[in-house]
Image 1: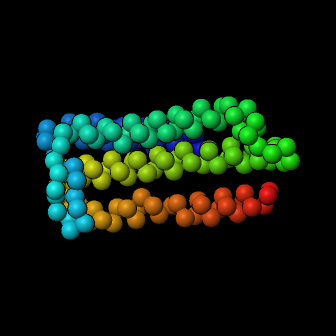
Image 2: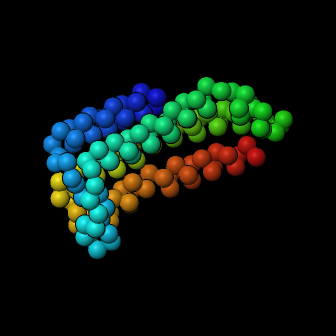
Length: 146
């Protein structure tokens, strides 16, 4: 899972670098629900989602390496099971975050080139598509140790 998440962020970095090379300095950066461009900005705003995703994944790597952070806040009953489940949840979130921020970067680059503007409303569904399965799976797992 770590290799998958690192790979997704590397692909994201490559997409952003190529986007920055190809795009003009001023690009559209906001599209309303009518698929109309209503905001422009600097092309370097494409870096912001990548930085946010990298920071979030770094926090998850940090939490994964700090066992005491979880064990100190858990009940004395089934502490080891809770800890292992928390670690598995964090490990599974990193590729999901990589996916989300990769899709956001691709969407931003395509709309900055005036492509896919009519489909921008559907990107929210593409971004959120894996979350219901992830949430249901982990709710089931957590309910079993309660």
